[in-house]
Amino acid sequence: MKQDMDRAWNGMGGLNVHFFDAYSMHNITELFALSEILHSFAPERIVEYGSAYCGLTRLFGRWAFLADAKVLGIDDHTYTNLRGWDKSMELMKQLPVELWEADEYKQETYERVQSFARDHRTLFYCDGGNKPAELRWCANILNPGDLLVTHDFDMDLDSKNVTFGLTDLMLEVAHITKAQAEPVIEKFNLERVFEDKLGDDESGKRRTRLLALRLKE
Image 1: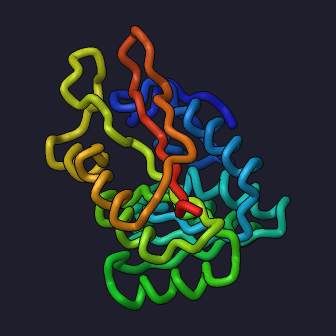
Image 2: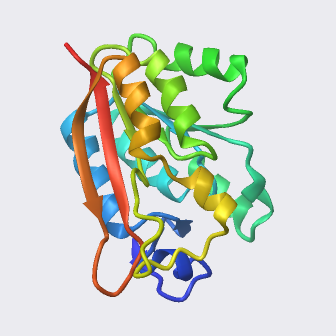
């Protein structure tokens, strides 16, 4: 993993990383937090909504390889035309990762994820194009002992100290607010396991907040 301060995402990310030579659109502090979650929760299955260029998928895949787990990454894969994609996929074949090109909101996707996660301790990670919708879908599949994680939760989008470099439309779908999350948490009887703000500093680099949920016992 290496720092890359000059890539195109720098306007929205500040400090970002390559992981196995793939761009990750995640703050480095978030990657460390996710690593802590993986090691403490030890999932047998990982479902990632919104795999994009597969930067974070590699983190999940490497962990799964060492832990004898499996990863399912779901995306429409609009990133396949990027330079280096074919080489990127060759590496993915060495990891226990299945990439599925699909509309994540169709019933067949729901059933596929449900089957993949059944009878296995599963970490669901919401990072697709509509986090509020993903949270509802995953909460409906969630079994006791599973973990549901979303990032860019309840960010202060109006802060003048944070430069995102995103259009208003992308900002609208890229995050989830407390007002959007609370009805899901209440409806599905969920409890917070982890909630933290990451990457926030005075220089205005991109912040995120991770939210991890599970069913109440």
